[in-house]
Image (cartoon, rainbow, N blue to C red; front, side):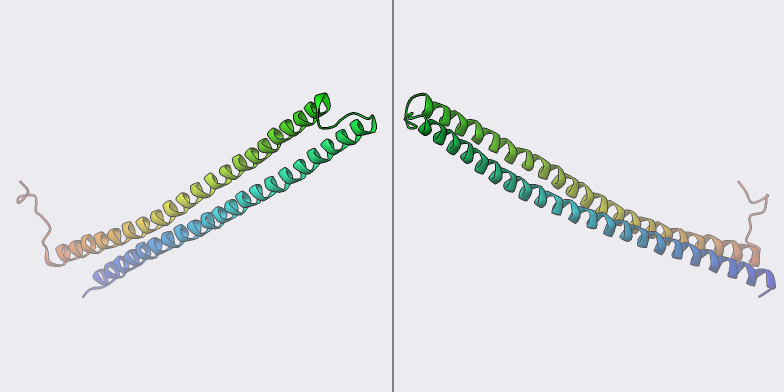
Length: 173
């Protein structure tokens, strides 16, 4: 085997090795990106749970405030010798309770909407993680096919040059 053939084989080997290493690196990048997206998805889920928890706490505080308001109304009416269980006094308390309940439900709904947004983000992040991982795997597979193609075409060229199998102009159709 001549020096030229040896150098060509070494170059071919280096090219194949580089393609395989590049594919392996691409897969690692995809795995890393996938892991980062999974972490971000878990954080979004934690934020969703936190939003619901904060909503429950705020709703509870608000309902307590409404009960306090109604208690103050009752005390005020009673202090003026008004029957707190009938007439306008009862209507005022009922309105405060009804409006308070509506506001408390609004607080709960707002927390649920915020949580749904975080849940949607978590789903999106998980999909991005899957895409990143698949992309890394696809890049690795493509690099393997590229290395195989390089090996075949390089070996073919070397054999054609070594044994004179190159097409001559007179054999070309």
